[in-house]
Length: 356
Image 1 (cartoon, helix red, strand yellow):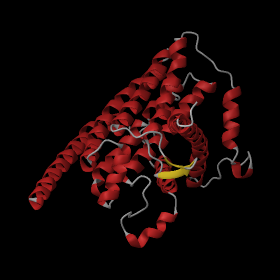
Image 2 (spheres, helix red, strand yellow):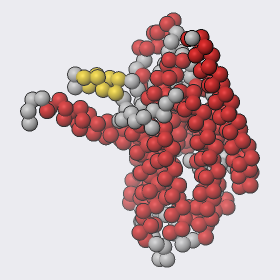
Image 3 (cartoon, helix red, strand yellow):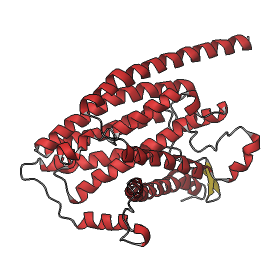
Image 4 (tube, one colour):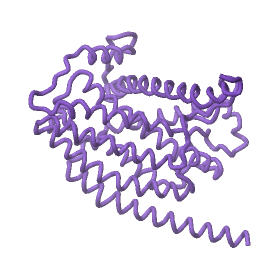
């Protein structure tokens, strides 16, 4: 290998692989401790302590849970479709992990004597990639319910497919409003558009923010929209027949999707890795905090909101769930998109006249 080829190899192979490994390990670690955080927060909301036995204050509980799932017997029902029964949890987990390829966690850091961006890649259709990949995960739920050859998982998978279709329409229409405001589909471009405008899109698109939050809860099957796995009705839903590591994959996928939704909302509406009020010179001292810490802090606050919702709100009935999606969220999303388009056209025409 020539001396000129070595730096190119580092830039095109070594650093991207290092980013992938770091993001994967960080995500799996975050998923493990998200479970502990959720159990603790819900316990505090109910005046309990939560897990306290394993390690100081229960901090090693995720390790114990992982060991339990690894050594637990992995059972396949006799009449199940064995190949699809195994494929389903993999098909649910993989999309939840590969979405992180386009999420920007920070601006730049110095590594190996060069400036390295804190994201795996930046493609010009990053938001479209996120919407497309996250939509694949529901196929794993549908296949799990069908392959189990059991009535409760099948009912759960039908619920999941109807729920995803209903809320994905509203969320996708809402995201178009954000694209109109930013003028780009790139995730990094949307963050930089917020830097240029000097204001988070939470304040520019508050209706879109509310719709994406509600849709994100529904698409990740989280309370109060956890109908596909309602224990009181469906004894666990689509993963009723699963155990061992295959059940663990469903568990990983659910919490990884929670982190994905938090990261996407942070990127689109909360300025991503930008500090608060990035154009205000009086707050320049906040730049001492690394950009990736701002991103993690915003995402953590949104994840806490996820857990807080589960601890406080009761589950919707299924007819209420579908009515909210089709009769409330979709009309509001269409109206928000129309208003955003009109305002954008008026601003562009006003800018053209001022320039002329």
